[in-house]
Amino acid sequence: MSFSSPFPEVDIPTASVYDYLFDDLHDHDADRVALIDAKSGRQTSYREMVARIESFAGGLAARGLGVGDVVGLLAPNSSAFAVAFHGILRAGATATTINALFTAKDIAKQLTDSKATMLVTVSPLREQAREGAAAAGLPAENVVVLDGAGRDTDGHPNADDLLAAGAPAPDVSFAPSAHLAVLPYSSGTTGNPKGVMLTHRNLVANVAQIRPLHGMTSDDVVLAVLPFFHIYGMTVLLNAALHARARLVIMPSFDLGEFLGNIAEHRCTVAFIAPPVAVALAKHPLIDDYDLSSLNVVMSGAAPLDADLGHAVAERLGCTVVQGYGMSELSPVSHITPFDYGEHDMRVEAPLSSVGWTVSNAASKIVDPETGRETPVPEEGLSETGELWFKGPNVMAGYLNNDDATKATIDDDGWLHTGDLAQVDAHGCVYIVDRLKELIKYKGYQVPPAELEAVLLSHPDIADAAVVGALDDEGEEVPKAFVVKQSDSELTEDDVMAFVAEHVAPYKKVRKVEFIDAVPKSASGKILRKDLRSR
Image (cartoon, rainbow, N blue to C red):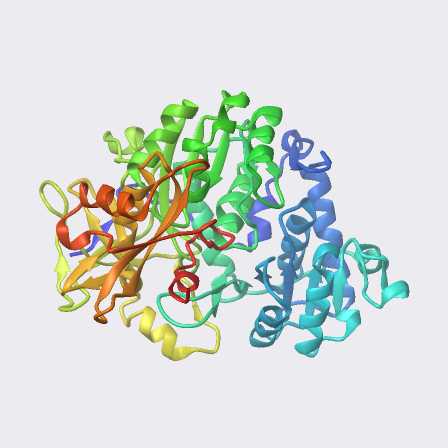
């Protein structure tokens, strides 16, 4: 049976993302600092940011871009990214955000599939941007290098060239429920990356759903290291924090020393992270060199956070640690633990091992992937494991030009099948077990890699770890651990296997171990298991 959100319904305005975020910007907030580029220290107020967004939108409109057009955005986190992103949406165009780590081939593929007619980038990514755009058929004058030399020098317009006409932001008209705001790319539950069609209403709805539960205010200082090009950073950091009129301290990439230094220098109160950062926060000796006392909340997402690891971070930093769950197709947040663990609304604390409750205006269900039988919410304890399904106003419009994939993901009743295995407890809290397609099948038993990774990370000599299915000498799929040792550790393969065997059922034991220098991960912190399987 389905279980609805326990939180109060929220109002979801019929508005564009820009109007929702900035239409009610009051004078007392306009001069607040909105963005700080951590590298340079440059500060941008809300008033300045909105003016730049309007100018950027005018520049795009002067070049004929608007409703129906797609603009690629390839850049690391910066105040310029925030302005360009919201400028694209303000102009009525659709932004397809591109992973800053992509090769020219990857860039060309996304530009071609999305039918983008312009690419906006920055100098450090200029070469792959230019090569990828050329392969996608974009002329040089349609590749804007914001901080570049300019059109007269190298053929690529820069920010000054784009804004030279001084054109006002255009008057645009579209239906927020139908018009695409962004086209991020995701592998979804199966297959190759696909364009995820997210409307203005999808993004507005998700900010409206999570804002009361986060509880962020204009007094918060939020560390923004998760990439804005990823839907987690785009919605939870960029949009939700700006809606709260908070201050964003922007980091273009993760460096532990800079991460800690920024918290200390700017007195950050909130940090959104992925589990790999939690590993460092729990184990790295560098933590003790910084004053992190301003930090009130650390929220983890993008991949499951082990409860023991989360508690270790909370104890070491003296702050609240919570986690949530989502996916690009859900704009992205579908389940959340409030910053107070749920005490105010639920009168009960969500365990750190859970991802919390279904967000407002939405419902979930747990379904046996083999039989299709719905799992009831238990009266006590945890339910049986099944695939997590979700329905709400933040569910994507579908995959771009891929009806088959859309129908395989969203059923006729509007339920999105996440592809993740989950359980629910008597209070409605959801627990993510693992990806359905990543389960290891050992002698007929299902072995979740995430469970074994959590055990491995509890070992003091293990800095990081990942588990995938690998074939043994007899062709049987077995759990294989890839382990990053702490410096100076003398840990052996046998030590690793023996340690895991002490903590899991016999069929879940690690049967192979390989030591590596680093676990490959995406920019959002997800383990790239396919890279490990190919080793």
